[in-house]
Length: 214
Image 1 (cartoon, helix red, strand yellow):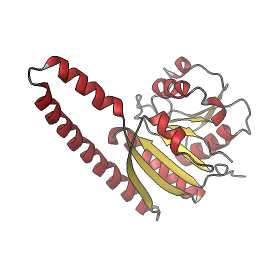
Image 2 (cartoon, helix red, strand yellow):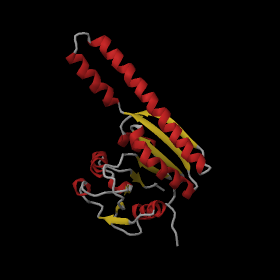
Image 3 (cartoon, helix red, strand yellow):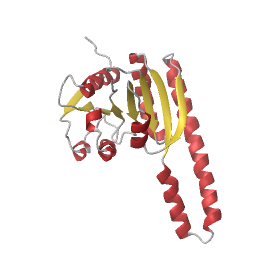
Image 4 (cartoon, helix red, strand yellow):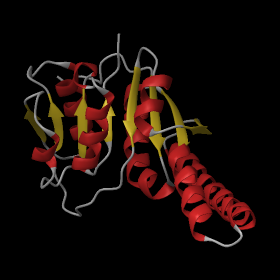
C-alpha cells in the first residue's frame, strides 16, 4: 500500500538562489501533485550577503559610499534576475502538472525562514544544489521505520524512483558529507538547535525536507 506524505497540506519551497532552486523545483511540484497540496516558493534574500559586501567595500575602496551604492544596485539586479528565473521555472513545472504555484521574495536565512514560515501541515523543502552528480538515495534521519521522516522519505523516493536509506536520528552532519544523496528528510524532533539544521544542509549538499507537523 502506498502511503502519502502524512498530513501534507502545503509544500513550501525555500531557496537562496535560482541555482539552488532548480534541482528542487521538480521535487516540490511532484510532491504537491501527489499529496494534492498547495505549492508556494520563496526566494530568500540573506541579509548577511549585503552586509558582508558592504563591509568589504567600505574598508577596501577610496570612495566607499558611491561604490557601495553601485554594488547594491548590481546585487539588486542579480536578485531580480534570479527571481524571474525561479518564478518562470516554477510556474512552467507547475503548469505541466496542472497546479498553481505562488512565488514571493522574503528576507532571512533558510533555517530562519523555515522555522518562521512553516505552518501545521507544511512539508518544507530547503533547496540546495546537489554537489555530486551521482543518483543517490533519499536519506531520512529516523529511528522508527514508521516515523514521519521515514514515511515522507518513502513517498519521495517513489516519486524520484530511487531508494530510501534510514540513518539514526542523531547521525552527525559530517557522516553525510561523502554520500551522494538525492534528498535529506528530517522530522521536527531533529531540528533543535537551528544550527544543526544548517550544519546538516551544508554537509548533505542536496535538497532537505522537513516533515509536516500535525
